[in-house]
Image (cartoon, rainbow, N blue to C red; front, side):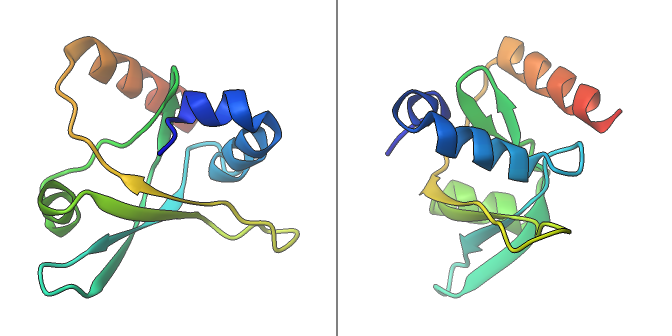
Length: 115
């Protein structure tokens, strides 16, 4: 499984196109699919944030967070583009991070992109 930084190194064009689709509305927007406890899919809109070489999200307590803590597998799909059918899709395994400096940078990036 590649980190965002590894994707940028190995497939820079794909990473650039993916970032463009995730951030096409200013703030990052995507649909996040997780797996419920019963094995069924759960899909939620969310705001992915690319900071340094990581693809991260600030996820509030709720079903989406509980799914990721229990079973970190996810699929993420960009919001539909307005002018064409371009899309970006990525899968992976989420990791919970508790690094205050990283959280500060993520929050700054989110606020900057939302402005």
